[in-house]
Length: 250
Length: 352
Image (cartoon, rainbow over all chains, first blue to last red; front, side, top):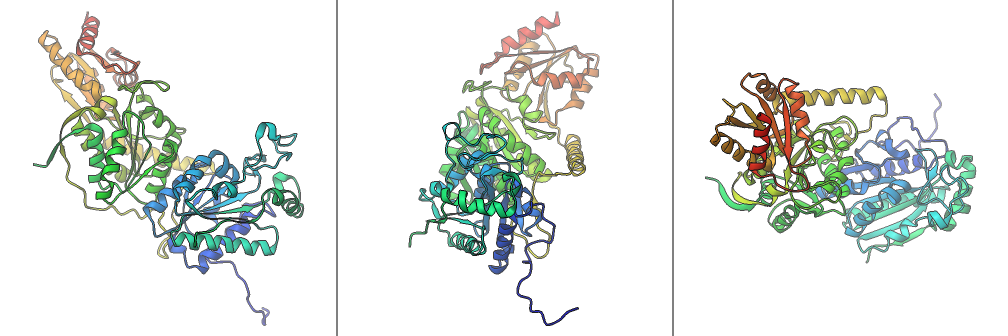
C-alpha cells in the first residue's frame, strides 16, 4: 500500500455507497452528492426529512442516508407542507423534476410557495421526462425534439417553456429563489452554495426557498455527456438565465 | 355524565377529532361537509393542532399522507366529488400503510350531482376507489352520537392496523342536529418508530413509500397487506341488530337509511309481518358471517336492502347469502330519502 498521499476528499457519510442507477453524465448524481455534503457539514442528518418525487430521482432514498417520504407524481409539495407543519424544527426539502414540479404538480407548487411553506424545493430542470423515456416537459425548449414533440416543440400549440424561478419569485411567501447549473466546476460550487443558502434561510423561518438546477439528460437528448453540457450552455442557459431571483428582505 | 351538547353531525365529528388528539387537519370546502373545517377553524386557536385549508382535495389527501408519514394523527374530510379526487392518494396511503382518518359525507351523484344526502359511494368506499388491491376500514355512522364515537374509534383503528379508516357518512347525518355525549379527550400518545422524522444513529433510515419496483417485492407487499386485511376481517366486524330473533324478513340498511328502516320494521310488525333489521356498522369488513347465518335459518324468507343508490350494498348481501334466500333491493336515487312506507310496500309485495 502506497503511503505519502493526503486525503483531500471522500464520499460524504450521508451519501450511501449504493451504486446509482443514473445514466453517465447525469447531473442528478452531482446534486445528490452536494445535498449529502451539506447535510454532513451542517450536521443535519437527524433533523432532515426529504421528499422524493416520481421521475428519475424516485430512488433518491436509496442514495442519501436520511429519512424520506416518497410522494405521488406532482404531490411532493403537499407532503412537504404537512411534514414541515407537523415537524417545524426539521429541515424539509422536496427533490423534484420538471414534469413533477411544473406540470402535474403546478398547483401544489404554486400554493405552497404562496403560503410561504417553510421548506426547500430542489428543482431539477432538464427540459424532458427522463424516466418515462424522453417525452416533452413543461420546460422543453421551443423547437426541441422529444418523443411526443418529434418535429420540435411548437409554441403555438404547446406554449413556451415555463420559467419556474421567475414565476415563484413573484410570491410574497417565497424568501429565496435561485437558478443554478452544474455544467462546470464553478457552477457546481455555486449550486452547493445556493442549496446551503436555501437550507439556512429555511432554518431562519423566512419563507419558501427554491433552487432550480438547470440540468441535462444525455440519454434522452440523444447525445454524449460532453455535448449535453454544451447544449446546457448554448441552448438552456440563454432561455433559463442563472442568478438569484429572490432574496430575503433584510 | 360526560359533556352533553346539541350539535350537527359534522360539528360532533370535528369536536371528536380534537378530543381524539388529532394533530393535523387538511381539508377543502365542499357541501355538505364544510361545517367540519369551519368548526375546526374556529377551535384552532384554543387547541394544539395544525389546520391547513388546501388548494384542492388532491392536495389535502397528500398533506394527510405527509402528516401521517411524519407520525401525526391526521384527518381530512370531504364529500363525494372530493373523495373521487382523493382516490390516487388513498391507494398510496393504503400501500404505504399510513394511519389516517378520511371522512366522506356523501351526497347524491354521479357527477356534480346534488348536495342532498346520498349513498352512491358505497362501491367506491368498500371496493377501493383507487388503483390496486387495497382495503379501507369503513365505518357508517347513523347518528350525531356515532359521528363522534366513530371518529374516536377511527383514529384508534387506523393506528392499530396502520391503515386508512374511512367514515362513510351522508349529508343527512352530517347536517342533522341531535344530542351528543362527547367523548373524553385522549391523552396517551402512540409510539410510531416507523415514522419519517429525521434519522437518528440508533436506527436505519425510515422511508415512507409505496414503490416496490421488483415484482417479487411488490407481490410480497401485497401478501402482507392481504394478511392484514384477513386479520381485520376476523376482528373488526361491527353491526347492530333490531328485532332479528324471530324475523322472517331481514331488512338491511346503513347510515341514515338504517334509521328509516327501524321504522319499517315497526310498521311491518304492526301489520303482523315479522321483520327485523341488520345494520352493518362496518361496511368493510362486512358482516358476511351474520348474513350467512340468517340466510341459513329456515324462518328467514328473504332479505330486503334499502339504500339511497341504485343498489350497491345489495351485491355484498347477495354474496353472503350465496343464493340461499332471495335478496331484493329498493331505495331512492338522486339525493332523495325513501319513506318507511315505500320500503314497507316494496317488502310486502315481494312476500306475495
